[in-house]
Length: 132
Length: 220
Image (cartoon, rainbow over all chains, first blue to last red; front, side):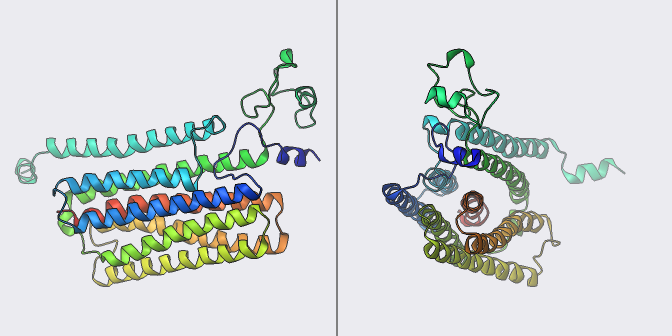
């Protein structure tokens, strides 16, 4: 009995990916998926176009790829996972921000440390000579 | 509303209530005032945390790959871009159809849900087949996971994503069977929500893979 009571109460927080039920919510949900799908296809096509064309300044292509990838991840989060900035989504967004923080720490921290090590390491030949 | 909910059987000991302000209380589950949040919210939020931790794990593989790829760029094979494009299209369409399936499930349409889940699974299987074909081709050219640091990192990262897709397909089959035999029970719906979150998150990881692993190889 109490189980039912919980299921029906939908005020307050909303979990990620939870749609509301009902006719107009279904059309709204479908529209959201369609918009997301169209934008994702456009961004994917832009990524594949960016590496084939010569219209973009060479060293800028990788930056374009990273930007397009981040944009597409945002599209997926908003339109497919339904993460919004609304007050009912505070917990989801906080968890997401924490996750992004850890991802950035791991990726950029590793790259930073490894480039630094690379820089400071003696060339292999010198190292070999010293060990003689 | 406020008085009724303060005596709700859900929270008999008023653990989640501010008992001093019964009159001004407002329903705010999860913020310590309206009692515990509904089970579907708790389950999908918990699964969201799992997905984020899974993405953190992927980020470690990405970091390893980036470090190795930066130092052994000449080792990289010439990837087949059209194969990657087809894989990307399959996974993206599959993710979209999974969303449509969850919309059908919300309206309790059995046939629509099963059909869209089946299409989701077929596209996922096509993706997996293309990926395995690519892996087999690489291994046959002596570019397998044991043939150098670049390939170890490549197979660990992309293979881990492929493993997730495989597990997702098994889960998808289970969900189709459960919906068919048990109907749209609350627990089955919650599992389906978790599955669709999982499937969308795999697509997010794939966006990073096709951009950073494959397309980056073709930058001038």
